[in-house]
Image (tube, rainbow, N blue to C red; front, side):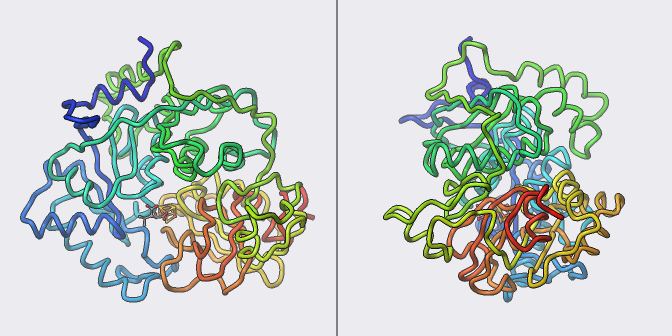
Amino acid sequence: MNQTLFDKLWDAHRVKSLDGDEDLIAIDRVFLHERTGSVALMSLLEAGRTPRHPEHVFCTMDHIVSTDAGRGADSSRTPDGGVFITATREAAKQAGINLIDVLDAEQGIVHVISPELGIVQPGLALVCPDSHTCSQGALGALAWGIGSTDAEHAIVTGCLRVKKPPQMRIQIDGKLSAGVTAKDLALHIIKTFGAAGARRCAVEYCGEAVNALSVEERLTLCNMAVEFAAFTAIIASDDKTADYLKGKRFSPSEAHWGAATDYWKNLQSDADANYDFVHHIDATAVRPTVTWGTSPAQAAAMTDAVPILDDDNEKALNYMGLSGGERISALKIDGAFIGSCTNARLSDLRAAATVLKGQKVADGVTAICVPGSMSVRRAAEAEGIDRIFKDAGFVWGAAGCAFCFYAGGDTFARGSRVISSTNRNFEGRQGPDVRTHLASPAVVAASAVMGTICAPEDVS
Ligand SMILES: CC(C)[C@H](C(=O)O)[C@@H](O)C(=O)O
Ligand code: SF4
């Protein structure tokens, strides 16, 4: 009794309480990618160690791979990145783990393909040397980002020493208005609490608006938890989660499905559960939200103005080429990007395609769409979504992290103002001097067409 979902999963995975305030936690799945996971893999092999459960370790190639449609197995966005990709491939094969290689049909961004393949499931403990592993808590799992050394340890021992984080419940009351997305909700929450607002807590999202979100929207919401300093995020699973996972490659088989879903149903916080912090957000107050600064917390409703310049925002406004007081929805853009583990799933591409249908990208705007996985890309193509994007003037890429972060190669031109469906807008995040405004895919699409930041209903 009095237990949160997070407490229950923590207890179920606690092998031992250690001296001090750490616990030894059993890890069910480890996911790696070529940027940081490769470091863990190579170090493990060099030391002559072997994975304890290679069948539960997965490696994808997503961060530095080329996202050009005609890419080869070793093409990279990073100069000389091909060597790294080849070395990761060899290491994964040598370690005998599951490799989802560049040209495999299921390749994609780790946090997109993990749910898509049923690798993350309610109740499992999953770690990955990537900060956005918090996304995967959206399926009711204990999932968090770690460093490469911890990843090596988890692969070899099946356990990790971890200090249990404090817990925060954020209840979203009421319904989101039409045209307001999970991305707007995530930005609204971070703007409300600040970039350090989650205080290293495990954040449980709940309430009417969260129950109403699809699994893909929940992934978007949880994805951004690390952007306000959460240890991770979690959402209790429900029938939507089970329907989403049914029949996926690594989901429980037909024979085990009944037992699995019976177990998942019990994975809920008790009504009288104790949290360290409890907050309520009014869903009806959330509006389409766009960032104006260099932190995801520097956000405002799109119809608002950029704040007046003061000591706190001067550095951010200088970087963003703003003087304060401009209307956000009047800012002229040079680039538009739809991609990343935040917003590049099928529902995101559908939302953007609805706006783009029959429209053209404005003159002078470089518009790029990179689906989150090759499965998303194929599903979009089966619906004709690729044609809508291409006819509008978007580049239609192959899956990967791409322009979400600067990989040292091609990017938007210096000083470009870019509207982006990603999760980070730090200085240089999308390339040297590139100015990123975070927004939902529908807003990115609308802005690409009009050439200024705007809402889908403003597209004429
Ligand atoms: C490269 C990787 C370690 C990094 C992360 O952990 O988040 C990346 O995915 C990012 O989004 O900046
Ligand atoms: S898409 Fe961006 S945020 Fe997500 S894992 Fe890749 S680099 Fe990180």
